[in-house]
Length: 272
Image 1 (spheres, rainbow, N blue to C red):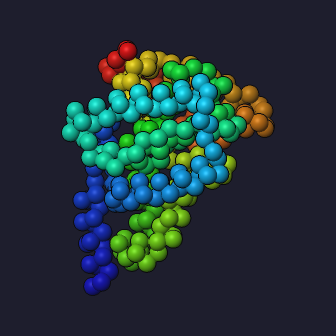
Image 2 (tube, rainbow, N blue to C red):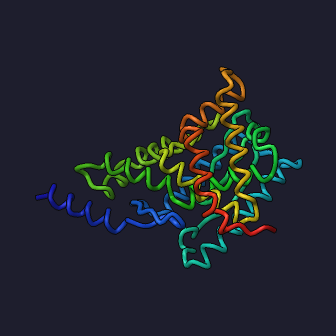
Image 3 (cartoon, helix red, strand yellow):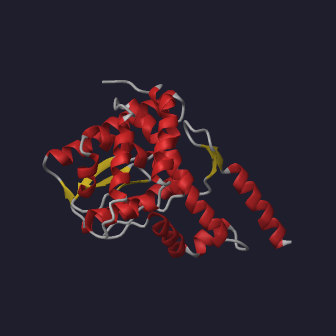
């Protein structure tokens, strides 16, 4: 009887937790309150910055903040216009550049963004940086972290119940969060699925376009990433590029999909 009750309760929770991702309209399951995801991200983000002090001066640091602010404003306007402001409720946007050779960037729930200095030689300019930051911000707006964590918690909580599991095992819950986000002193990539990466590619193009950046620059950027990832090097910057691209769709598939989605992204392009 208890098992049947928990099973029925789980079904109700799953149905009630279904929502749609903005723009793509894909249905997803988010079992956790986004406020809890944001709370965990604030703690992790603060710990990361203590070990990796952000760059506070110079044109590169200013560029990261400016690009982030432009995308933030565009996303906020879109969410407000489409009655989706609850999607970013509680966000405390922040953009930081850190000195690290990794070709990497990420955004945690709540709008906490980090760009690694190793990414800038590959982006080469503000426009390409906007493509990357738009992609990372898209992960947060699409609540990909919540979606992945919900899936993991359901597996872990079988036979116990989600609420009971989170109450009885708060440390395990946090470990699942850290396992998905993989934020460490060296900063590994976020553990999203390839489907989520593709969705973030498309939403990222739209967010960059809304902020006044031509989405077409994404093709050149990913071609440079592809060239680096196939350079045959085994260390240094190329090592991190290989690690970055290995968690994402294959280069040729990604570029093909971006080209196919470009006409849709251009509908949102608003040159400044």
